[in-house]
Image 1 (cartoon, rainbow, N blue to C red):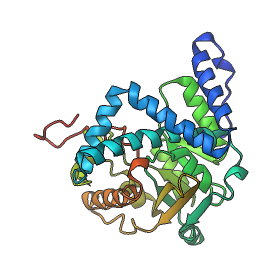
Image 2 (cartoon, helix red, strand yellow):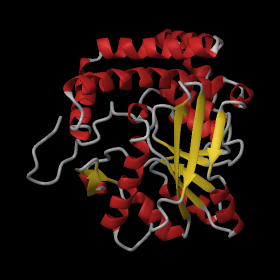
Image 3 (cartoon, rainbow, N blue to C red):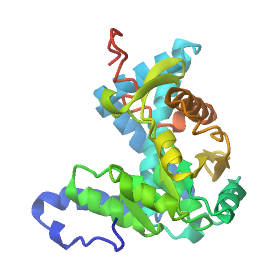
Length: 305
């Protein structure tokens, strides 16, 4: 687990210049007034919608499956809004890495934080179960000053971006843990620490069980149940959404996963998916629908993507 900000001096070769240019643009954008930042984010989302036919197809499929009750025009609008919110999410990520916490002091409300405090008073670790909302990094950074936590993460395929992401997160968190380092996660939870993880992405059939998500049997990792069983940690749900016409953020810690672990992995996973679905429905376009959430299918089921 890294304890210091990783160095960037190894990434000044010409092949990395386009990434540096993009990062410089983001750092410039987050100096703009708030409304301009949001507008630029929406513009980035529009550009992604126009240029990424593959991702556009994935989002359309996800929306048609999960929001089949909407009319065709309503689904088209949601697809465009999802791209707009993902564009804003890129700006929010830059703000999470480089903006001062003072920039958000009047923009954040936290509900349910006392649940973390109560668990720690009891000497228990806290497994803070999040999800891949568009403002993933920013939501965590806004929680960290009040409730410091360790975050699990998946190593980025680009070495420079991996270094940037780690540095950005370590600006605000006491530590980060690679997703595969389960021993370290267990160690932290047994020490009474708070550990965030997001179990809502497809990790393949070998590490998943199937449980409903938006009415679809969905491959979901049962890691939350297994970690809670192994450590005795308190399982809490964490969600965050942009509100008030993109001016404020609501962070919510809830006890909706109190029944985990129950001793039944499938029942626990169904409980988990239902809780995440309920939070996603509050602001559907602020979820990472660009991901192929339904890629792994039950045996003899047709492929979706």
